[in-house]
Each structure stands twice: as structure tokens, then as C-alpha cells.
Image 1: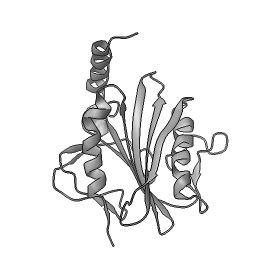
Image 2 (image 1 turned 45 degrees about the vertical axis):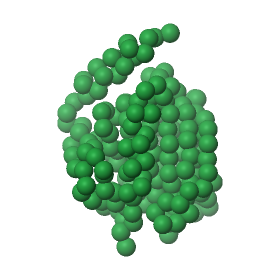
Image 3 (image 1 turned 135 degrees about the vertical axis):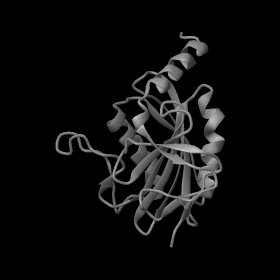
Image 4 (image 1 turned 45 degrees about the horizontal axis):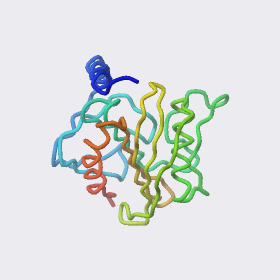
Length: 198
């Protein structure tokens, strides 16, 4: 078993080796940010970095210390019939889609199927799920664990709502050891600040 200290050092090296070109946005504390030109906006209680790599048409990713250490992804107004993330090969390897028939209780499974297809992972488990208001309407909050392609156990938390037939969701992913517990409160503060512009 790899000692925690060595694992953290390897992760830090991965983060510092990431090209600076990918971190193209700085989200300043206290300033309202509109997500992906959608109705979703947040007011970060602390500074964040927005990554330049766009996961999909309706998605963007923020981080505090690097995508592998703490990753907040916004899915802002995913339209019916669309996937959460960009497809690599729509004909041979289609991504799961948000459908008109998708209910709030189906959202955790949609995220699981998306992660399995996008990240080519076999281990994913939703560990908790319960109703929770989000964006002024009925929502769901759920927790999950998975083993990513780097074989590092990760934890996640997501909050979602369906508003006017569109899916709005925020997810937080981080290594289960140390990083999840260190940063999850920063993610929850972002969720609490989320609003829909009318």
C-alpha cells in the first residue's frame, strides 16, 4: 500500500506539471459569475480557478488546487436530449443523455452512467441520496464514491434540480483521503450561493 505522504506528493507533482494554459479563468471572491452563458450564477465566497478545458456544451469546471485535487463542475441548463459532457464518438460510444422523461430520482444514475462512459471506470457507487431544495425548487443531493483511472479512491457530492425542463447540477470530486474533507465546505458554499437569473 502506498503511504499517504507519497500519494499526496505525487498528486502535487501532477498539479504543478499541468500547463498553465488550461487555467484560463480567475473567479474572484464576492463577484457574481454567470455559468456558461446560462441562467445559473454563483457568488464565490473565496477565489477559484476556472479550467480552460470545457467538459461539454453546458459544463465548466473550477478548482482550488488542481483538477485532480478538487474539482467543481457546473452543468448549467442541460437541454433535453443532450449529454452532460462532450461525446468522443456519438455513433460507436454514445454518452447517456438527459431526457424529457428524466426525473430527479434518475439524476444520480445519469451521473453514474456518464462517469462510467467518460472516464472508463468500473467502480462507482451512490452512497446517499435525499431531497433538498436547490435554485428555489425541488432538488436532490447525493454522495458517491468511485475509483478513477489513476486507481485513487475518490468521493463526490452533487446537487441538482430540473427547472423548466433543463437540468442544473453542481458536482464536487476529490480524493477520498484528505482532499475531499478539506474542500467540501468550499463547494457547499458555492451551492448555497447559486441562483437562477430571471
